Length: 296
Image (cartoon, rainbow, N blue to C red; front, top):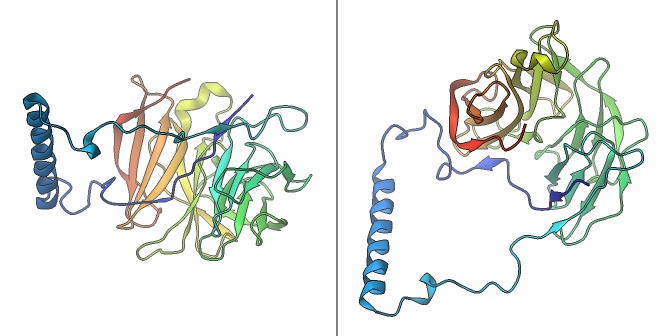
């Protein structure tokens, strides 16, 4: 049985929570950061003094009793029958706030209109749909499900997943390597800068002449990007070799952050790269000191 949490995250991050290596002030502490840090130190010191001196601690600093759980877990999909492949589920938020959860490598999904409190019955995109990755176009509100390959058929919904229609799309690749999107996280729409409105879809590629699980060193992540609302897609330059299963986010300064699983890492650290041109190239490669793989 597979479970997915019904919470979700946005595709745009604030500079205060994550900062690109080339952002102004990233190489040294800004005056604002130093001021905030000093203020936190003063508050912590004052609390320690009050506790040690026996003074009553302000209510805000005391542990608060929580009457309701902060999170709950609900089984949305069960591996059985004709929807066994749900190990890579996806969940997105439509423009009207509807949550849409997809059962991994399949055509099945469920929706929620009340922020995940209740969910619809299992729904089907089409018997002809073979699954894929999903992206919400924040400009049009359309929801697209697609996966690169020969004669790609994308499935598009214009009414928040009530109905779906198929359409042919074109993928322009930089070489003969095969790219697949299903193992990566959902795509995003850029909201800032020169490329505002561009669609970004994280994708894992592998060299055409390599096959099987033993070729992970020849896998690499990249993204597909589209400037015509998903009709045509172009491949970016690659990130680190030996990577897969990527997640991409946009910062409020317009830079893109991509975080990748590293199949060849000896210490299980995930790989990081940055784009400053709307997803065409990725630079400033590094290994994360905070995010590690939890399983093989």
